[in-house]
Image (cartoon, rainbow, N blue to C red; front, side, top):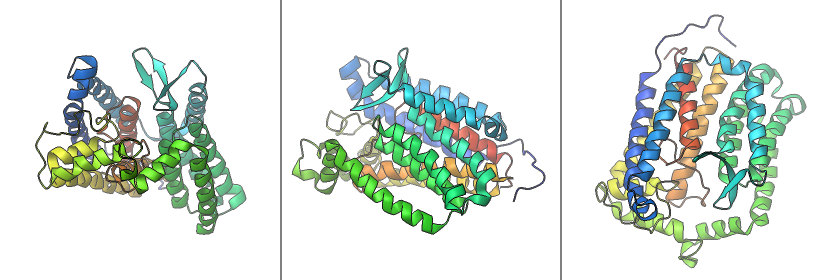
Amino acid sequence: MSRKKTSIKYAPDYTLLTIILALLVIGTVMVYSSSYVWAEYKYADPHFFLKRQLLFSGIGTIAMFFFMTIPYTTWKKYSKVILLACFLLLLVVLIPGIGMERGGAQSWIGVGAFSIQPSEFMKLGLIIFLAAYLTVQQKYITSFKKGFFPSLILVFTAFGLIMLQPDLGTGAVLVATCMVMIYAAGARLLHFAGLIAIGIIGFAGLILSAPYRISRITAFLNPWEDPTGDGFQIIQSLYAIGPGGLMGLGFGESIQKYFYLPEPQNDFIFAILGEEFGFLGGTFVIGLFILLFWRGLKVALEAPDAYGRFLALGIVSMLTIQVMMNISVVIGLIPVTGVTLPFLSYGGSSLTLTLCSAGILLNVSRYAKL
């Protein structure tokens, strides 16, 4: 399957790089627009979130260009160490006094004035390891015992640790991404059918085991039944998107960011973008994400070896699944998941790891015939 010779182009896919940088610029602008009211009220500094986002973007961009220079095959050599480190971080965050709790989830570890989110590291770490595993074990993937089941054990062990925090949104992105990779490796549909049946039962159990998840489901089905409680966030999101119309209210003119939509710079930043730039602005950003998926998939298809193909596919799948989940939540298609919008949402670990992932994808593109 692998080609005999791998030659580097010495230049990344500039189309893909341009799309990533464009999304990053749009995200920085929207973080400022959506957050300055809340930042002024809480920190007496309207630029508080903007300055931190610029810092995260700067660090992430430097990391992206650095990772772009590292041959992607390097990650295969250290995939086991990377995965072990990610598992250790997921265990450490669960230790009382070390893990920080936000929004009911103990998902962060404090590092000075900042914090890191181990589950974000696990998403990339598991992609790196699974790509290496599938490269070696692909010939056994049609066998449930030798190929499919060992892959599931690995994926759902990581998922289980993330659910102990709990963080269903990140866990769902991780599982969905890994399933795409395993399917692409040649796993049998019959095995997936059984997995889906078990997954539905397990998912129902997870929902029933936590009252707040049941509340999210009922709020999704009828948010106006509890407009000031569980349905508040999605209602305010729809109130933001609706008035945006075709052209939007204009940059900085959002009404919902005035303490209606909670923390609009995070998971619901697309709602503020829709309010200020309308249907055309939202369509433009979605178009950029579609182009990102297309170029990323092309890189995966044209990668010179199996590891490069699995690695690129995993990264582009992770980004695409996360985009689909976030925007679906914002427009009311699925219940609230707590998943950020790649390159746009405010955040440290999420943005930095997303840009690192993009750097690896861009490095694969340096070897691909595009």
